[in-house]
Length: 287
Image 1 (cartoon, one colour):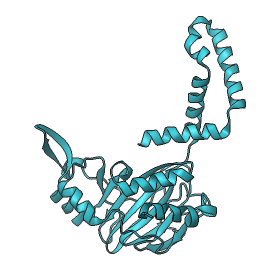
Image 2 (spheres, helix red, strand yellow):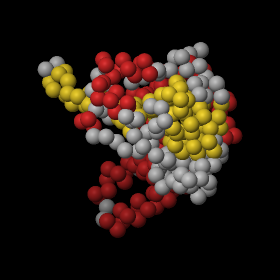
Image 3 (cartoon, one colour):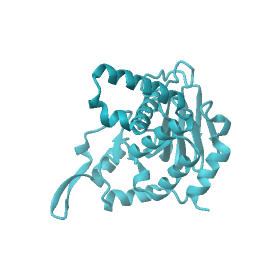
Image 4 (cartoon, rainbow, N blue to C red):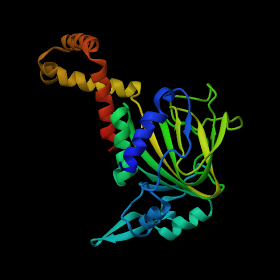
């Protein structure tokens, strides 16, 4: 079994379950990270790959330095192209405490893609993936909420996490309006540890005793807006007569027919089909 398949099975069988949407959960030394991305892999990407911004960025205590301060122009088949990593500049930023963040790994890193797709096989979510390489005693992001469930896997080093899970701090939307003076949980993640956070749980993390590398998956369920968009998509697909021949009806009759058709569609639309359309649309938007 590959590392990706093993990790997916661990998340399915041991991590989520009754904790999904209810409480955080930590599995200590739960997965083999040897086949996942490493800091050495990232060093090679900086020095030799065609990885471009915004697949990578830098963060320091919530602030983002100018993109031009860590990217370079390269000649690609005779064309000048911006946004490639400037390895020396990236390392200088990191020496001053900046976190290197890699975005949407599932687009270009196989094991991360396999894990994301595995999670989507048993959860009604759109999965996205990120890596955070953080220097000692630094943090990339301020205390914040993600508008998604979060699974974090510690790959290298140690990272101290702070959760702020009071009911008045947990919310549906992403945000920075977190009272960081009263953490509800403090713990340290080490290589092989896996953390699950429910949707909207505020958190931050600081590298301890050296650099830290961790892999994060955000698992986003359909919002009411996503469901409305999916309903509209199904409505337009199921009402070709109205869609293609509306011009043959006077406006008052047109609005009446659309209203009636919407009511009928809402009553008969299968909930599972509705949710599946929303999830599929979200996954297409990500990847």
